[in-house]
Length: 358
Image (cartoon, rainbow, N blue to C red; front, top):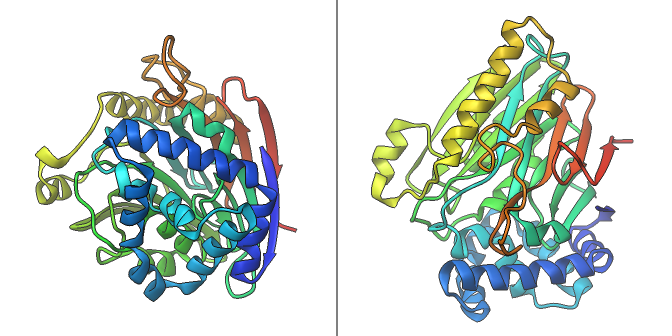
């Protein structure tokens, strides 16, 4: 996976991203153009028009987000609206797509050797070629270490204040023209503490449904909050001394009622994975073992219920544009501010890397 070290103004950061990851940006554009057509029978030209609907709200939220996307477009020699469409990909054509990937966990120091936040990121095999690591030194916001897709400015990672975020897709056939999910992730990582992060996503500020598992370890201790987001409301769970986990279905009965079951798109494997990760965590605790990075990696390598397992592999006779695989697994030590990255499946990664803040 290519590692980018970006700094300066928002436009500078974007231009460096677009220049250094030009190949990955172009691959993202090609992959999502195919995906939108396959999932929603939507041409890219229409996707661009839908992306434009979010412009006013993004500008009101943080104009630096637009500047950074403008920089990527310049560096990668594509249009700004191409990059905007990538960053609104969840809203444009995937709200009615059946969710089928990602398992996230947050583990507090009372049961683990540190405050850990991590997940598998399961998505179309084709997008594995677009993945990049970015270290972002911003002028007016925290330094960020993040794994993302070429052209997308917000995803999974942590900042220099020990605040991290994981993402689980939640598919409900509804959306607004507010802040796209991936820009919401960036706004979380632009926050100095958990309260600021939660404020940035509350009150239906996010345009479509998603699950954000957010945690921080600072001088006051460790804390994790899971937030199920939708255009009609949100629900939260918080812990300082235990664990949280999530897959790809709404757990909040209140939100399910508000949204309406007929608008939800859920596959059975999300329930298998939720049950399995909970069992693996509880078994470790009951065995009186202190949870470590190695143990979390073992969980992320689990093949129970295969092919609907936590660790996802390419299925036979399937296309890289339709098959869901574990593209990477990530474990963040929020106390040491360390990001442990396994590219590919955790059971047999193609590459392992550790990233720290200087």
